[in-house]
Image 1 (spheres, helix red, strand yellow):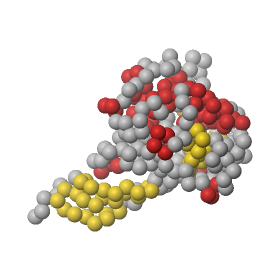
Image 2 (cartoon, rainbow, N blue to C red):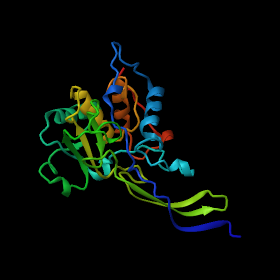
Image 3 (cartoon, rainbow, N blue to C red):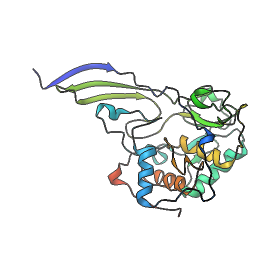
Image 4 (cartoon, rainbow, N blue to C red):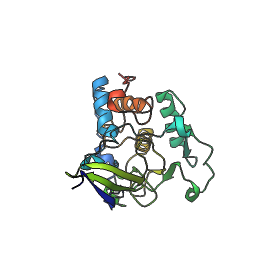
Amino acid sequence: MNKYMKRAIYLFGILSAFAFAGCDEDEFRDTDDGTEIVGPEGILNNLKATNLTDEGFPWYGLHAFGIDDLVRLKSWNVAQDGFIPVKTGGFDLAEQALDKIELEIGKTLFDRISIANVPNEHINRGIIVSQETALGAFGSTTDPNGCGHVSEGIGTTSYPPHNFYITETAEGGQVLDYVLTDGFYDATGTIDAVLYVHIGAPACENEIDLDLVIHEFGHALGMGPHFDGFGNGPAIDGNFWNVLYNLYNNPTGTTEDQLTILQVKF
């Protein structure tokens, strides 16, 4: 028997198109003292929980097949692909959010011009702000806390779906080679897609403020599961900014052992 068993295009059909509970504002539990602002070790742990991981929505979960290639920073690769196109539709809080993010990150990230007047259906890369289209838990249109989420389009909580094919395995089942196509990021960690930032909804009963809008942009920029200071507790605080700063001040695709962690909020 050959050492390696070839499998021609074995499709697992793993998609990131399953329903997502969204950002339920009921989780944003503000306290008088806020959350503890953690140091470099805690920043790394938060970064691992929300982005370096390959587990949890919206990440692909290839670790389930023993593949660790995507345990790396996943971000818009501004150095390679240019600034992130954003269509705010003139929404003032969105413009303020972009200003605040660039101020805190210490660099320009956004291109606010190139897709500003392009019909949504003709946009093939960037972030589109959509007002009054947020969905609640599991796509609910009646959730009073469903005031913001990120997805591939209007009327869905899904991210752009990916396709994963195992093309070669070892005799014991270890994956030796695979093909990853589509999705919203690739095997290098580069985010390259159209993502909608949904803000507000007819059923939303909570205040739409700058922190909420920045929180949703955080998701669109590559932050996945919540952590203390990002949805667990306040929508954002210093822990959020420390993670986002390090996400965009290390190269796309950086692995944990190559990271430079800096604390900018104390």
